Length: 204
Image 1 (cartoon, rainbow, N blue to C red):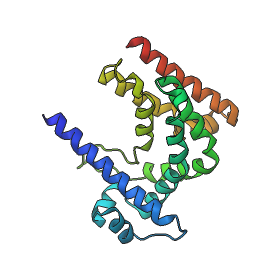
Image 2 (image 1 turned 120 degrees about the vertical axis):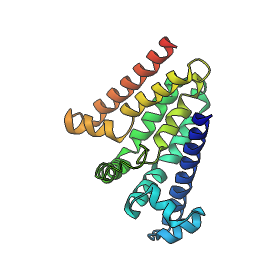
Image 3 (image 1 turned 90 degrees about the horizontal axis):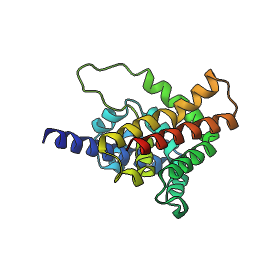
Image 4 (image 1 turned 180 degrees about the vertical axis):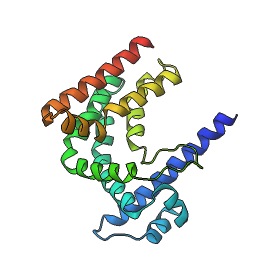
């Protein structure tokens, strides 16, 4: 019962955060920088609710801008009937789409990572994601065909593993630490993701 309540609270927190980000993106679309009060009114939440998710307006606006760049093409890629029912192909389509828009989104990702990494730890609150779980949602959507064949624990482990290799952090490590060019970076990320999905399927 307690696990169900915790899951429900987390789902509500994700919906609230998503509403805040969408409101910020919509208000920013015209080129002006919205205020916290304007975003709160558009998302129908209190100012303090926004600050519980985003310590600074800069973090919120960067997150919203990144979402505006990536969300439409990603949703289109995952809706492609050609990859329906094939989790590996869906994850691959997600990766290729994200990397295609990387020139616009990765600079934002570097700024957002710096902001969240530098946030002070709060030992009085339980651990919680510091960034919008947009990537997790996309990975869950891509891997949806495996829900009936994997246990919930195995499914969530796969999503966690894919979170490590799909996203800005992986790109930064491959560029800054390994010195890979864009082509080698894409090949590596796609190979790693495919290996994880195939392993999960074999174990399942």
